[in-house]
Image (cartoon, rainbow, N blue to C red; front, side, top):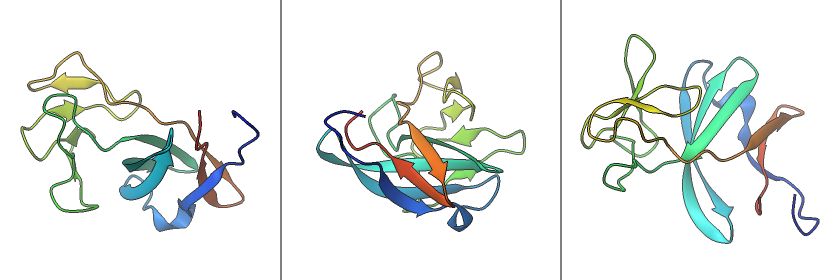
Length: 117
């Protein structure tokens, strides 16, 4: 963490369904950003809620994300499909690109982010 900034609480872990998503707002590098959180058990991954193809949000409705039967996140705008380990686009118009990861941690039942990575 830079400048001694403390991690900031984003959401309670239990508020994210296991195998599901949540959308939260957070200040990243001083700018307010929409974040996409994905939970697997006690692990949470986070990315900016922006598709690399056209810069649009990934959710089809605020906080509502599409997930295929084989576990891919689908961008609601143009159908790009992303795997949920590294956020890499595996199908669609931005194949080979990736979502911008945001480091988060789980501590004492809360998901936290470093506001100034």
